[in-house]
Image (tube, rainbow, N blue to C red; front, side):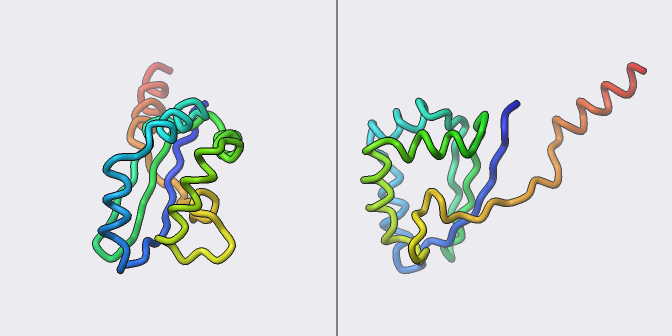
Length: 118
């Protein structure tokens, strides 16, 4: 079953332009590593004050994170991205706050369709 994961981070407001520029042309080997590690439909959304919301679909978030952590490109990327956040000892890929899903249209429509067949 696919996990739909939404998370939040806070980009330092003085670094928003640089953060956005870095994501305009992500390294090809990073993109490939994400795909090979099971990250699908991955998006980042950034508000003007630095609030960053991420969304990704994975079979297993912990396994996808572990697969990425095992790659050399991820270590380089996380080291470069760390300057955009104030996370202490956490890396951006593990220091995010996961948000709870409270509504999913397709799930409720599927439940509704299933109950109407009874």
